[in-house]
Image (cartoon, rainbow, N blue to C red; front, side, top):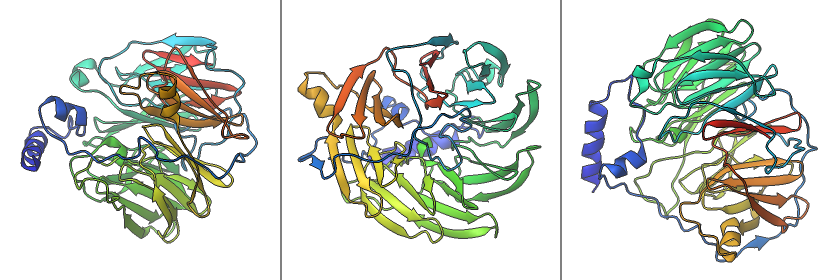
Length: 435
């Protein structure tokens, strides 16, 4: 089995040019008859739920005009937003052309009162706050990508939006004059999110090579290559910037820290697999979330970690199999995995203080859960929301954690969510919603 997988991957990689080597698609491997060793998942059903706390404290909810990164900022630290609406009340939608079979989660941001995203046909859309089209720019002709699903990462800084894609290009688009400012071809799929530091724009490719680009003109400042295992999910490549440190990962399960002031490698750690997991795994990481002098992440290797940024020391580790970005609150870390296991950890000790199976609530109401997975975790107006790929949304009251409600919405978010001025924006199928 391992031999067949290895031979297939070698054939696959040797027969793909750098331009179209878009990363290994696990579902495609399965459809081609390749057996993929899976991790053992024992966390779908809990033997016992925990309720050592009854509430958690969030910072006061705030309104935000700009949401310049998919995860709010270069630290991936999503704040507690104010949300005045509800998911059953859709204010307005904007339609765009839908492509088939693109499983990549889309990015959507808000900058300078403009809603910005890229569709599956590489059209950069710029909308006003009422979701009326201001400008549209086509990045690629269809003949270039017609056989391949596209993945775009987008961020904004001042009056420009920056786009990186899995065909290997990065571009800057002027939001004032609505024209291309610069473009650079890096040749290998760019799979990570992007982040800023001073005049540097960072992004990582599928070879585990991180680039620092000058965001004014697109020129390469420097690059650092870490290598690649060659069988990666795009979620293996994550990065964050905080405290003059650049944190990034590769698909060898290595986390690197570069000191941007001293311009040297500060430390490197390697994530360890839990004993219940196979030695062949397609690594998926959550976003690296930085708060003060620490960062938090969880992974498909079965752990959630708190790590000291200065030293790379793991402060605590606990079981937490998830590639969904955790939420950082005043005293706790909130996490959920794709199978609906909802955990709250004590931020100081890593101890699980609250645990509940959200999917068991659905099962108890005779709701079938075939292929149901959690897709988003976020907080707004003292409520934690957990949404799934089949249109269910859970509401958890942070002032009474035992108060869990669920409802069904017309569309499941297929992007990050942008909270701005009391509204929320997200993409589902071929529409963008404002609620």
